[in-house]
Image 1 (cartoon, one colour):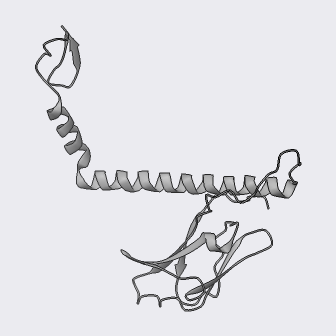
Image 2 (image 1 turned 30 degrees about the horizontal axis):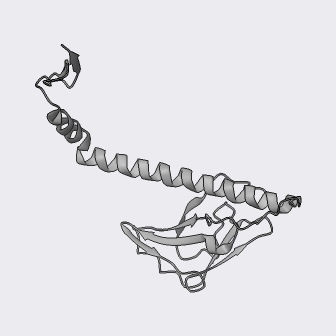
Length: 173
């Protein structure tokens, strides 16, 4: 398979009438995919085989079918399914010295690497965005900067010709 999508997560609406979901990304194996039910701040990790079935088509694209999903909430609240892929970090292909590897084995290794790259980008960007939003919401930048400034020394060090002024700038004396 060649990785044909740059995403590793999809958020889809669940109204109770959908018979299937196509998140638009591929996976190496069905067990790499998780589904989370989200209503407002409530998140419920769903179980494959109990809440939904999962299959991969001939190109590795993920297909989800509801089995016993939680019911959607009454309007105006909405529910969503967050479908995510987390490829195993383990190397599953073994190469022997002197034996040329098959193109299929090389493609499998390259595909798994591309999928893990996508997942790392998702996770790093999501963490940075969530952390940034939390800091901004709490007024944390001003607090962090004020705390940092307060921690700087304002007296000249005895053995060095440098000191920090009240604005946090190093000054040579």
